[in-house]
Length: 114
Image (tube, rainbow, N blue to C red):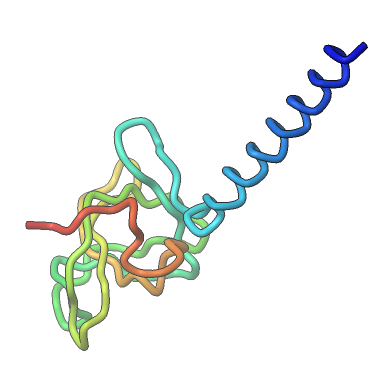
């Protein structure tokens, strides 16, 4: 009987621990592993550029909700964070961090571009 009670306590503790683990990951819930790197989505329609400022060459539009495969991040105009990567099947380019659902920028899962 005591063994059964102990197993219930252990199961409850495991569920609590799992909940805490999942709970701590919510800050990065909008960035996920997508096979060969991290992905996120566009918060709104945004331009993809050749460099980390809006004055550079515009490449294409990343539509709101579309997946963006992130390579790394860098500093842009005005001290903002920009991410380089690509929409699946499209060319690489730079997107401002506030246009992506990465959470707090820079996202801790994404490395700095050297």
